[in-house]
Image 1 (cartoon, rainbow, N blue to C red):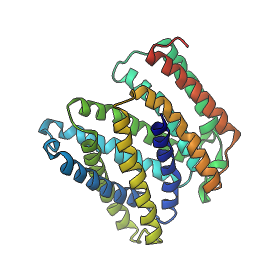
Image 2 (cartoon, rainbow, N blue to C red):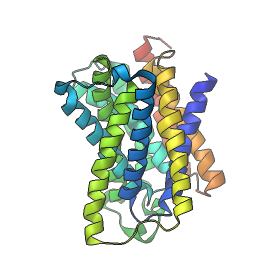
Image 3 (cartoon, helix red, strand yellow):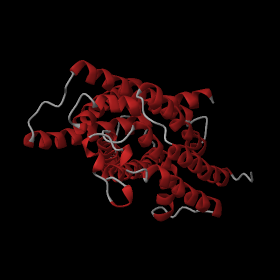
Length: 303
């Protein structure tokens, strides 16, 4: 159990680290491109060294790998980091807590998975829990765009972040399909990160064409935080998740993921001076209650 908590403490640290990295670049897309290309090369290199016999992709599966790169890396990370520049890291962390509910909804609508009454009630409670987190008004928006809020006090940053969470959550269904085909998680992530990074680099090329300005303010700080993100999330975090999946069920790991915002709140408060609003706490409690109902139905427990 201690390694599960350690893993989510590591994942939670990537939100404030990512926000600090953004302070030294004018382009979120450039940050994602560099991070994912380096991470992809490292993971694929590790796969080749440890077990190059599995470094094979069937022609009929190429399109599936491209979908993972598109949804998990390109859309998921670009939308997240674009929003992270304007939204507190703790709020971003909390919004990712809604991912299990999005997963259940997608499983029901797209893959015809069964939803019992406890899962339905959990989904409803989870949606209610997101209300005080998302509808927190313009006071949570950082910078000059603090007034750029839309109807019901939801900014377009929160909308884009939610879209990114949906994209990355959907990608896990595709990753699960590839794993069932016999591909290792390291190979899948390595290829997805490399392709997603190259797509991001191409997008940055278009951005640079219209605004030819070098995007890094301080090279040592930028690449320092970049290295920390790659080491903690792309290498240690994903490796630990793959190892823990052999010992614990995916349901348990998903449920344990609700410790991530607790660690995130600690980091944001003590290291970045962000405020832990009351509506964050209320929303988190409701999300936890909703996921508890999910967990009970997944495990077949009665209490």
